[in-house]
Image (cartoon, rainbow, N blue to C red; front, top):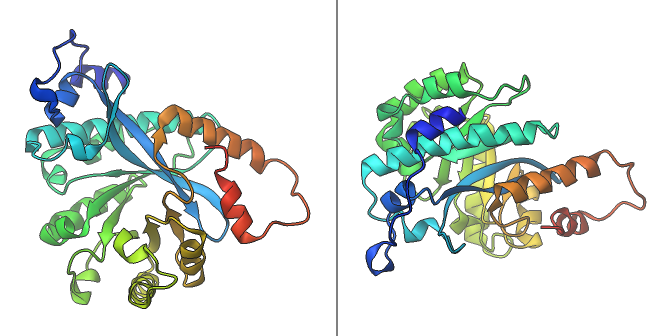
Length: 294
């Protein structure tokens, strides 16, 4: 896998900074500024780390970190496809570091719908999958709008992915306008509730109702639900109470560099082996302490 990454993005001599300080995705790829950071995903009932979403970042030579909003807008399709291939291959390689700790967690990556047509994703997963026997597979996240536009493609790729123990997640669910009839056709195993509905769901009746409806639909279709952008214990408690499976957000942890994530995972693995302490902490205290070391 490392050889394939090196072929895709061979080392290049230092290049001058982009003119006017503006950085494009092409600049990030050519200069090898690309990094994958990870944001933990938490089982809301068990209060344990069960996965992480891979998020793209760029690091300048001076150490300055760039968020996707500063270099992804206006990116060409060719650059987006090159980025997608690199994200998939890097996440597969990074899982090996997680497996070395004895952790079997599912990583997820964001994939544009066009990549399912123009990249050999199934072959990449088959040939470059981690060597760990207990690899749980990779989750490929597609936004609701893109999935609705290319529903037939999503259905076709889902069958190939299942054979590789991989699955599709519907990202930002609720931000689009899917009909219930079409929702039943979606070949997804996970719905990610859009952050705009999660915010203040413990006091905002509209948001609470929308979250409840989405979670109920997901249960009927035997899909897991992931709430994005959880920032307060109140939101987490509300979502757990209405049956949401997994949470993700700043309440638990911000996105972090891969080495930091692996270090965190190692500490959690050690902590999981310790005898249970008494008295038991409340759920709120457990949430506050879950990522106290990040």
